[in-house]
Length: 188
Ligand code: IMP
Ligand code: MG
Image (cartoon, rainbow, N blue to C red; front, side, top):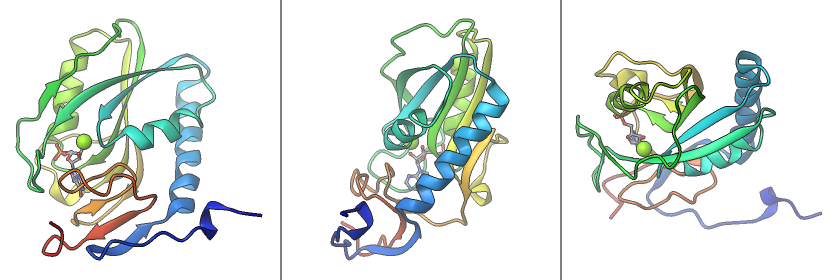
């Protein structure tokens, strides 16, 4: 039998330690989907995927949710091509559908300083959804500058810059199937 685990894939030199491999991520996503399902019940969930980092996480999470799901995307940029955050995230690509009266679940890759999630919540609240919850795959509480927490958190990590599974460094490494630290002095 051929499984994903048996494939070998060269690891870029800049990659440091793998924090979460494919199976750890998959297991945690199933648990998150169960937690979300327990809180939400069987009603429809409108997922707002924060592009680009949450693309892969959203795709996997959405397929594990048992409720009916709608998916919309919003583009929000906090880092540009650098690894230090700017405090005013920029929105572009407005939502395709209205969210008035909907049960919204914001899905993002990582909660870091909190500026992005906080700005996203304020923005979406103005569109009068019935509820807003948030789910992030990773949480770096040590870096928080704005008081905001996610309702559902995949993994809490220390203050390290990580890539893979949607997360990038200067737009690279998003397609790595694992989440790993990166040696920024080696990365181009
Ligand atoms: P915040 O506004 O500082 O909370 O930043 C959230 C956004 O910054 C995330 O959606 C990511 O796009 C990006 N980000 C924060 N930390 C990392 C990291 O360690 N690796 C890659 N992207 C990160
Ligand atoms: Mg992001």
